[in-house]
Length: 439
Image 1: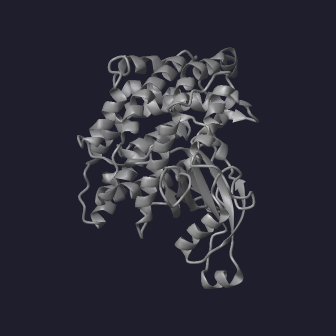
Image 2 (image 1 turned 30 degrees about the horizontal axis):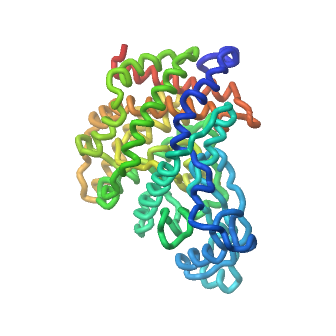
């Protein structure tokens, strides 16, 4: 592991420094109180009518939504909190019971037991600041919250039109944006994947699981390279504006993390990126938006809690498409390898996974009569090119996670978990510096 528990204890004051100096700025933009989401008027329904207290979504409304999709109308039961939902910061997430009578179940086999409600709400993120004694300015947060929710709605709507889904995504019953007439608040109603698990970030993915993740990426990229509808979704003004804000946040987080024992390579990365061109992250994205490099649909935030696994340890679903965008075919793979598996696995499996990706993607495209747009050498070059973007995401993730429940145990920072996450970050940043000849 990078750094010892002693080092982390002696330098634990970095947690407050990162939060106070950096995350206050970040969350002033991306955190808002839930009440601002539900400002479409007073809640007039009785408590027994509401699915969630204080949220103007009625049981009758949900029953009608489900009936429209399934052809039968359920009775709506109680709502509850999903496992691992504390790891999400941009939404209120609840599971809701559905009850069908015997006649309905006989005429419509395999009716769902639950659905999931995902309501745009980033109030939980403010806790990161409050725990450090900071204040949250929510002046601009509603706009960002709306952007992330709308992005997810856009892509779920595209996936929902398909009879043959490109990969394991949930069935969508409703994807309503702010102002839509079909729902009183911005909300997504989706399939609940029953009896599934997520793997802990620090436990990480093993070799077999990594290949299964690559299988899903291949399916997503075949969809990207053989269809056009997804390209119609363009980055809006809020997303473009947030690019500059995000770069500032990553820079400040990087400066703080670089002070930690073992993470000095981050300073070299900063010197060769941010200090040479403050817009370098935006420019990397523009390469794909402007079609200077071949692009695919990227998840954008693919890490352990977004991937659900069934009892046979196969992928049941990939969720949280809030920052999905047009980007590099290597972006999602980089993020998984840099954060969600051991350093040993990343170094041992990167090249075999790239070989597997190339062979399977080539075969899949050929079966659809589409030419493979990359040679194997070009896949290698694309992977190396994406280290710089991947490093920025890895730095941001480690700075955020180390001040959140992701790397806590029983509500307190877990120095062992932080050390392992930092070890992965250290190795990946050092490799980035080496691959791009930074000095």
